[in-house]
Length: 424
Image (cartoon, rainbow, N blue to C red):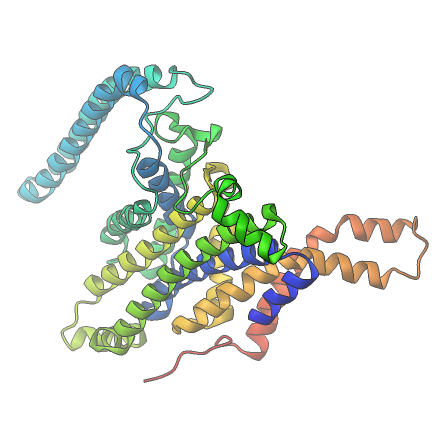
């Protein structure tokens, strides 16, 4: 991978090479999250996109400055509505446990509490939402965040994703395995729907731009005397050098997170916990007969994997500097991450990391490679030949073809991945 990234640096640009490196690091962390769920326990998570989006939401809520006018206009109503919603959930849990002797009346009673609680919540929230979204909608129109350092959002993103995974897992993990896939797919779409249309929380499709950075800005570096002095000594372009330094700083932070997660994952996988998870994955009936709580262990690993995905989601928004709910697509944030795990080797942390690097590299570089290949193959044709022009115009589609080829070749010649799981 180092050679391929260096090749991009020499042939295209070093800015592109370091951008690729940063995205490869984030992709590797997402891939590790899915590998924890699938490789360790055989849990099929079809809602990777939703957990990554929750990480992005955390970046907004933690780092953006609060909007005082919006809080004054409707903050109280939103808070009251959330309290009513929380009380409604608690009341239903209490009724579910305490009213078992009432038979079917229990369901009617719970339904009544849900309807009343939801109605009261909407009565409290709806006027506040309208008031908040009316506050300078071109610039704000939402409550904003806490104004804290954005790096804290990486932990909060993990907590958000873990909390969502706990709710889904408590409902679906005790059922058949395919129900988990359906539940995660459903919760992912619900999360995305909320992010797109609840403007008071995320500005919806108007996006949130200008998120703070954990690294210096290029402009500040270009104005710094020490940086100008170094650039002069090496006779470099100050604009390009400042951009490279920022990307290097991001890469350093992402690398620390990746190495920490790998260390924790490898320690867990090689210890008694990892052996227990593999035993449950390979034979649930036997593990259950040995006294292991399969559902509880599944819930544990599902929450851990989702938390890692949430951390990666927050890191991605930190790198982009903006939160765009419409950019979350299943092809990019679910299918591609699964391809990374399959290509790299499920059950092996290093395989998942390698898969993240390889797949993302070809996902980005497939288009220029395809364009170069088409230009080479059609070099014997007339420059204005219709077939040549058609192929060049559609060079972007080689990205999907390349991903399909990579997946097919891997499944044919290395069905257990580039770095297969080591049986211990």
